[in-house]
Length: 225
Ligand SMILES: CC(C)(COP(=O)(O)OP(=O)(O)OC[C@H]1O[C@@H](n2cnc3c(N)ncnc32)[C@H](O)[C@@H]1OP(=O)(O)O)[C@@H](O)C(=O)NCCC(=O)NCCS
Image 1 (cartoon, protein in one colour):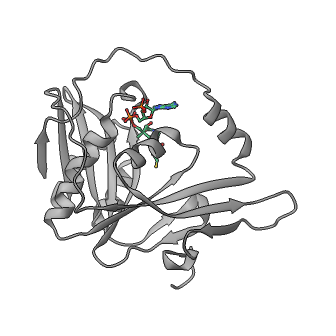
Image 2 (cartoon, protein in one colour):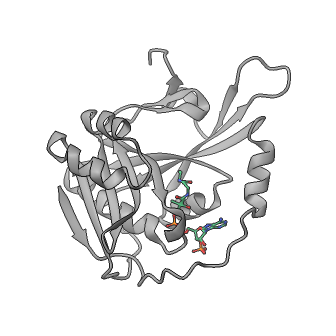
């Protein structure tokens, strides 16, 4: 287990004003049964990253490997994950980064060193050589809008770079503005946009890609690559 102190701007736990139903959320809810749009972002791990101000209250821990399993479960169950999910992912070799604020788990992000199922698309994402997939990132509601997503992800990027990885992939709903904004802000490149349609009368969801053919990175879940 690796522990990293610091990161993120000095955190004030004053709730920021936010509308529960901002226009993006409303649009998302109205359209998601019929049409979904996802951006596939590629992070070049060799690129310089934006600096993050020091936050003395934040400690980030990385968990990977069976020896870290119990500690990972203890950290992630209070954040809402089930012990079974944590166990299955750790046993698969995944890495998880967890941010603690004054000892309380505030958010996490997972990294897979192999295929990941993108259930919402019915597709499986296959990493290329020296590539990982970043998936399932969450900052607990009361800690959002303080820049924690990046603070929790940054040590992972260092770990990956030190272990010889070149790129990371992530897929993000275009209408998930906080996550989309962060991916752009970190200098990640959109390498594919996926439009996923299930219009009235269509029996199956249909996925179309822009920017690169879908089969460069994805197969239908259950199908061989
Ligand atoms: C996405 C998520 C991890 C971002 O975490 P975070 O630590 O709150 O992110 P940040 O504080 O860096 O905020 C990112 C940006 O989104 C903005 N933002 C946050 N919530 C927002 C909202 N509801 N509507 C619009 N913008 C929002 C922030 O203001 C910030 O932009 P700004 O710096 O221009 O103001 C968090 O919102 C979350 O856990 N969401 C639910 C799970 C999820 O969507 N995970 C990502 C799946 S890919």
